Length: 288
Image 1 (cartoon, one colour):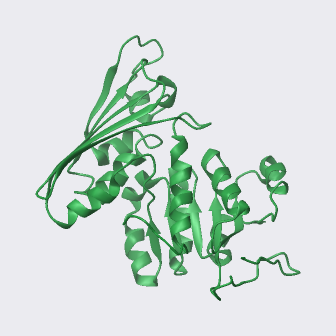
Image 2 (cartoon, rainbow, N blue to C red):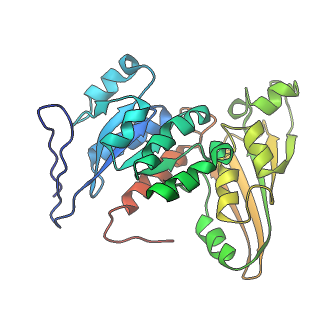
Image 3 (cartoon, rainbow, N blue to C red):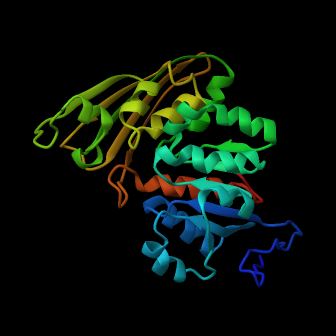
């Protein structure tokens, strides 16, 4: 049984589990549809982990949720999370990625990046983490098969292609659509919005194509991973199909994700982060 305690100053004390291991403190930046699910899972219990802190733009808005947790975490500013946690989970808009990740990895902590598309414009954070003993962890997110892509990349991957189809509501407001003045509100049939590299897709659809960037980092990189994006009024789920040609295998994958409370994000994204956190101290880990 894992024990938790809070010192008189309201801060989490380092505790140990029944195996004598100190538990890992987890902080969450952002309590939207993803962050609240992760916080709830941590509060309910993940082996060897404890929710120690959160950072939110409007603490009053989330006070009822935090008060409902068994052990409410500290509410801190973004730059304080690295002091209060061993793992900082980024669940905020991509524009906030650097402000969340940099202080954590500078302190030699781990940062779980959900807005992985934003990492491409801040890739020096990887070098910063390496220099300070930190880590940047990218969850599988709304995809399947990244284990297979990682394995194939040990050999030679010849090509990676991804086709994404999303309901209209999940694409509204994307910079690419706004910039090109594309009307998707009255579509009656699928419309191909974009075809290009994962790097280009991340810029044009920052809230929608984190999956493409995660795929690219697992395989041949953001400039060789090719992406199509369709606005499709005939689908109600976020649909991704991936085709990989490698010297070790040829494989394809398809997934249909149920949107979360935020139509731009699949419900499975939060579950993927929870699965990643469980691996940090799990006795049994399955998959690479």
